[in-house]
Image (tube, rainbow, N blue to C red; front, side, top):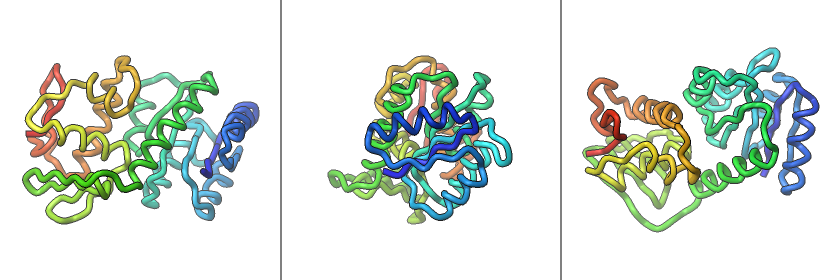
Length: 226
């Protein structure tokens, strides 16, 4: 696994590199956004850990650059801010997770492993199963989503969310249940995180936010697909 680490705080970047290398990962560590962008363009990466507040192109811009290149590997954002707007901004641009500085390096490693498991599962074959819902086709075996026979580009996390809702078609899935079954972590007021990912899925499906065809919001309860 090749992991990009970008942070202009040398001590943090070096610490993250040390812990990742101890887990056997190949680390591409940079202190400037220019070097990181060059790495993204030339190396077949499997993961990125990006500092938000960095000179030049910031972490949000680099996250968008990665997704605009149609690269689907997981991205974790590191931020010294605790403003929900910054967290939501990163998730909206395609980040999979975020951690607030200062953080426990062991927790970061756990998040990395969790996202790698999801990404690996997304790119592997699993038991054959396809779900059809009024023009929407979810191919579990191929980890593909089609809308009226046209592929929809979803990140592994977005795919898992849509698949779980589709597998529970007709039932309201609470935010807590959705989070704990998709993220495989304890739910701790993560409604904003879920809301942003649902919004991104709806955008990719071309949904009318006021009258969504597929993912319905049941206010105060959760989400469902009819």
